[in-house]
Image 1: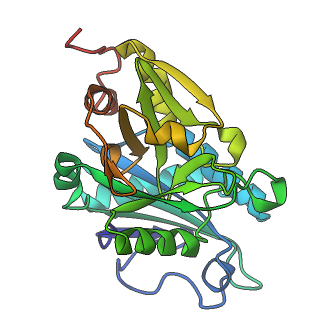
Image 2 (image 1 turned 30 degrees about the horizontal axis):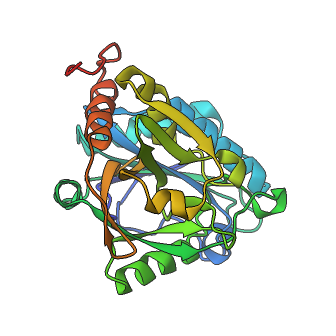
Length: 286
């Protein structure tokens, strides 16, 4: 779902040619995957939950052990690429790399169009395959860090597609549900929405955080914890959340049909409203 960028800016250089060279081949962000990034969705020219994403980027860089960007520099790069791109609705990505040996760390900001297939996938519904993946709850495994070391996640998505699904949901070898390759996982039991706890080492998604806040305004309780895969398989409704995909309904898990329910649609509608600035809007169908 990665579209090519239309605008790119680099710290210390400003705007650069979008498809040109940006980092050195010996930058550890490229050679060892030691870099952090954030992906945000832009609504009407405004990045959603920008401050929270910047906080998470800084935290990820600190865990990786090199100097984070200054907030002023980050904000300036974001403004620069958004103005240059001129896309009201888009994807914004921010990267922070250690730089090549003997150089300063680099920050990269880019803007790309939204993937064309997102709304078609939302209409059809997403198919998931569960794959074994150990939780990263011990500190040296960098729990909750959004780094560019995504090879295992890419391989998981490829395996899910080999099984006839669209994406994977990671499950600890003991059967505990974790997260998707680029998403947080949710399901409904009655009027309660369940989602794995951050204590399991999963990523603290900003869209996840927004849904935790929105759910009670729509009449849903939220329960976070360590849940067995059997709870997910028995759910009356399943969906995922992420910055770019937003709220995505799930229609199959491991080849078994999952019924579509009302929570995903209601949360998607509420998310869009607050992202576009209608902060005080509740569920207009209530």
